[in-house]
Amino acid sequence: MASGRQLPKRLMRLIGLVEETLAVLLLIGISAVVLLQVFGRYIFVNPFIWPEELTRLMLVWLTFVGAAAVTRRGAHIAVDMLIRRLPPVTALVLATLVEAVTAGTFVWVTLLAARLAQQVMPLPLAATQWSMGVMVWPAVVGCALIAAHALIRTVAQLRALLTGDDAARQEILEREVVRS
Amino acid sequence: MIALYGLGLLALLATSLPVAVCILLVGVGAILIADVPHSMIVERLIFGLDSFLLIAIPLFLFMGNLMNASGITARIFAFAQSLVGHWNAGLAQVNVVSSVIFSGMSGSALADAAGLGSIEIKAMREAGYKPAYAAAITAASATIGPVIPPSIAAILYAFIADVSIGRMFLAGIVPGFLMTAVLMATVHWRARHLDLPRTPRVDGRTRLRSFTIALPALVCPVVLIGGMRSGAFTATELAAVGVLYAALLGAIFHRDVSLRDLWSAARETAITAGGIMLIVAAAHVFAWILAREQIPQDLARWIVDLGLAEWQFLLVVNVILLILGMLLDTTAILILVAPVLAPVAVALGLDPVHFGIVMIVNMMVGLLTPPVGMALFVVARLADTSVGAVAREALPYVATLLVTLLVLTYVPGIVLFLPDLVYGGSP
Image (cartoon, rainbow over all chains, first blue to last red; front, top):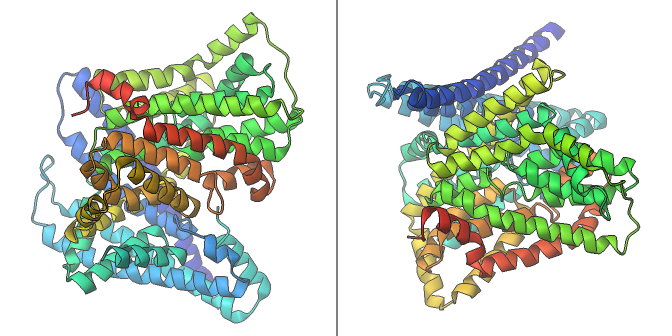
């Protein structure tokens, strides 16, 4: 039974590692391609047109992959003034609701984005002639990951809330609420 | 309609929902109320990011984090110390001077506070300064960062208000130095009443040596601003050059910087960028709802009908922004307020670049005011003291920065002088 619980946890940690590594590679990639564009213009006197489009694509990918990593760490930019002042149990109830609403919102966004991705598949991008799907599908995956991380956090917080273990509640609160 | 959206948004934000989610939920509201097509929400969310200028945001963040990781901050600190360390309250002045130098290679106040701050606060505590005093001047001087270019806030504003990023960057230089002078004067004035330690004056040779060591760092802002001015590079390209430069500095001059340090700087940047860019993406949804509901136009008409003079409008805006600055994060304020107010300011005949700098300086004061003063949180943790104690110590700086803000608000020439000189008069 224990290993049954361990497996999803390990899987999520692996996904987290993949997200963060991918985000770093995209960041380095964007820097490199923009530099290539500068050198292309001034050194080879031969301006490429595809690098600009590629970097814009990578920015979209970086945003959604990065946002998934942010969700996993519970580090979204938010106003935590009220929740910091609530008594622990109330704060945890609110934090759980927040994660649940985040999960719900991104399930909805994922479904809409997937529909959009299908619609734009036949359309080509201007410079690379790739399908516009390469811009939208990664966003679909990113949004789905955001929803998944938020859902997992909802469940973890709910469990801490219901099992009634004060230490576990406190630990989750400190990790979730007092983040800055 | 404005009140409905505004209050709904504030209520959502208060629950500690992520800012991006709050905006998306306002989108859901717009679908229900105004019969907006569902698909538009996600189209705006994704395609809105498809901008070359926005790429500059993660790149400038990356450059600042790499500079911090490469140990360049310690050299800047040593150089500033050789310049002003022997003054009254020397290390506090060093703190301000270091921040000004570092602001030329970093676009975010929090990167300044966290990177330079750890060195500054440590040195000040060892010299016998009170932790809260050290933390407060660190937070106050970090606010110069986003005013002097490069600046993430200026890029965001240029993007939202559709003004030239070159003008925005140049417009920040004089106000940034004015803030520096004001902070140094405040430190000096307070030092007469407090018993603060000094460090001995260094001789010319030591000063020259620390200058040489810091030179690679000092060159960076000059190259950035020169490259921008010449028109040969876009802001995004300069940011990429800056990333390469920072990485090379770390690799060549600082052998003790490991690949692991660089990787962790990249990881921190990528995650921070993910958080910021998701809000920027959501901002497109918000801007589109605003435009569809004609909210800026209605607001502008309403304000014009009120017969507010320019100065009254600016005063009201400053007060509102200061209150928001006590509650909200800088990126969130820019994204939620700039698309509403920038068109109104233009309709009233104000220069959008001047208005943008006023907004940014105002939000920087907000970083120093509780309950949500992000800079206070960062430095209080570094100095291992309470946020309340730092906030109290920061009060004199908040007061003098507010006076500076008033001057910048009502003397647009200070802000617009440099961009007008370089790019010609405002259109």
